[in-house]
Every structure is written in structure tokens, then in C-alpha cells.
Image 1 (cartoon, one colour):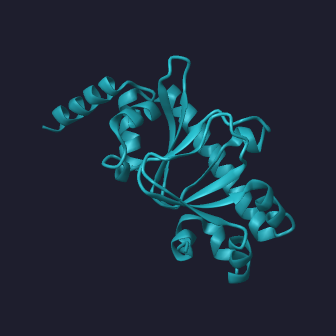
Image 2 (cartoon, helix red, strand yellow):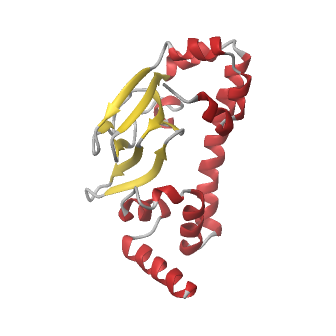
Image 3 (cartoon, one colour):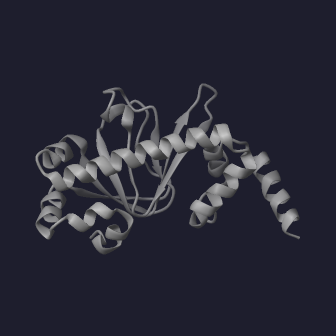
Length: 196
């Protein structure tokens, strides 16, 4: 089951929810258990779900015209993920979603979530919180690419997600930072040299 005490610290609006609110919401979810490497949503899919990571690690990636996989997002425990192009634009997913390690997700159809949220002020506040948080995160990524050097982006990633350094292959971290694995290696070496 989800640890709601932990979520109350991560997401302030959970403090306003009653056990009845939470129970009603959970009645419409299902658990999806994934093996490491398992792709659970493919490019072109129209499955409109929201995924909450109870345990594990997932990545979002696309395959370019050269057949290369480019990772654009990573999500881990107590984070949510969905495909905005399906949910907001009614277009097929441009990305694949893959478990990078054994993962357990709480899944709900977006359509069902909207029905539950509609008319419930507490859940509507929660949905606004998630929507605003997602927008802020997306804009922060764009701002970082404009304002920060690759080394500064890496240092920010390390500060904000230190637990991912030993869980995520370097090539995926490099993708998220918009650099090559070779550049990432050089940045790490430069930082290590500065500390000596």
C-alpha cells in the first residue's frame, strides 16, 4: 500500500484528505509490477494513464530516426508520470516508458481520475498542485538549458537527485542533461580534479 504519511511530507495537499477520500481514490487504481528492462508503454500508444511510482525507477525515452534511444525523464519513488501528449493533446505518445529496475506502479486511467476529482475540492486542489508542479519542472528544464552550462546542469542533477547516480546508467543521465556520455565523463573528471 502507498505510504500516505510520507506523501503528506512530499505533497502538502495530502494533509487535507480524509481516509474516505483516499479510500475512494484507491478503489479505482491497480498495481502494475514490472521487471527490470520491461517497457510498459510504447511510442504510438493512446493509453491515457497516470503512473505513481511506489517502488522502483522508470525512464521515458524516444527512438530517433537513427534508431538511437534518447532518455528525457526519470521518475522514482513517490513521483508520478503520465504522457501529456495523450492526456492534453489527444495525440499518441511520443515516448516509451520503461522500468529500469524491478518496479511497482499504482496506475489509474486519467479519465477515471478526472471523474473522481470533479466536484471534490480537495482532489481538485491536488490535481492543480500536480499540474502546476509538472509545468514548473518542465519550464525549469528549459531554463536550465538556456541559463546553465553542462557542468552546472550536472551539479544541479547531483544535488537534486543524488540517489540516482548509482541507480541510472551514465548514458541515461547524459541524455537527460543534453550531453554525450563522453562529455559527462569529462565533466566528472574535471570536478574530481578541482576537489583535489
